[in-house]
Image 1 (tube, rainbow over the protein chains, first blue to last red):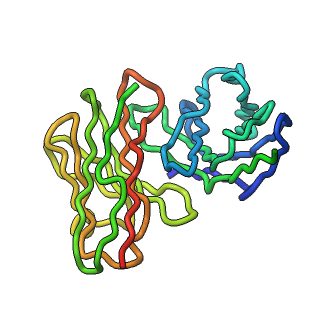
Image 2: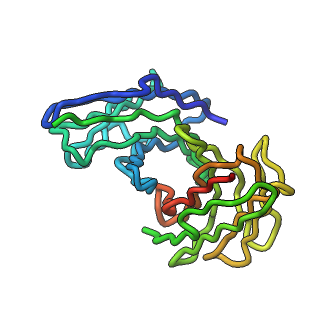
Length: 115
Length: 114
């Protein structure tokens, strides 16, 4: 199984500021997908953003963007203009490019937003 | 996207008993999975639910403890058998299909064993 590492157990950010969450992964595959999921206290896993490995352009979804460095096997998430509703646990996840939707998750980063 | 209904949302169970968790999807999907999330931890894959055949279990999980059924392409159940307090976790159903890149999740079942 692929290894996904999130080295920041907790991050705190002031409302309206920017925070960056780090994620590294280990794989020998060339075709794969990377995701950031958000899990608020409701337990629901919500997709924040996805990145296909074959795409060089970094994905962006509104205030969320990634810095995908394929050679370095790094996939960081930047949350801009942080809002109170962004407070949650964030998981980095890896999926093989084959027709297999099993995900390997990182340990997660708890994001706290200060008003 | 797929809409997933997972039941029950939460339960408190006595040790030694069993609980069956249901996962219903609003459309046919290729793949269904069950994950466990222990308190304050990440998600760990328990097994892939295969339609019409035995589930495929990950290392550390066995069928006797976590029997899984998948009678059709929209429904699956996970049973947590002979429960102990160590089974207290959130259990999540997930689905994937070739029409989408990402996997979708149910809202999870919070299980507490006393």
